[in-house]
Length: 178
Image (tube, rainbow, N blue to C red; front, side, top):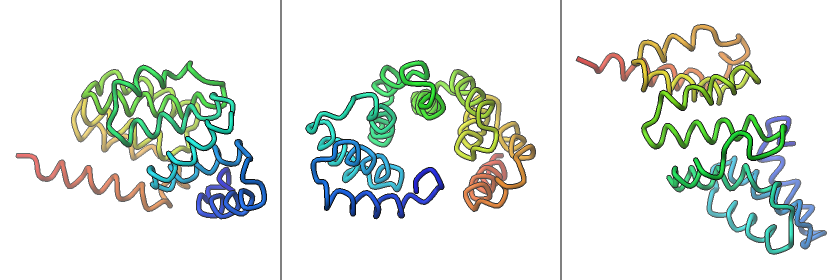
């Protein structure tokens, strides 16, 4: 369900599975990932810890751990642990985003742009990658440069409310500048 973009459905499915199989480490890890994706960092961390205690393969937790570090504003740790080449090819996109966000959190927008450019290149339809690139570009090169990146977004991306919220936010910031 999470691959189809339905985090809430994935959470329900995984909780149902864990009622039947409470010792399923992989399901616990996936539930932790889904909870973190939904914004429930604290509960996601609990499930991640349960998965660790049950012996889940550590690589399965890499992206979730990176997202927790970012949510906790532990940018130096995220930078060290979430390098794009630290995981599998399947994890590389999420690690590029995490690494880029850690760099942004440290005020290193110029460096963050490279991670987000790589993420956009690998998944041009990813709103999260575009938002990261626009934020890094705005911080490094000015708000108008960041706003300009929204023009080239795919049509399906422009159907997502987060696209318009981010674009509007940048436009408001640009309007408030002297």
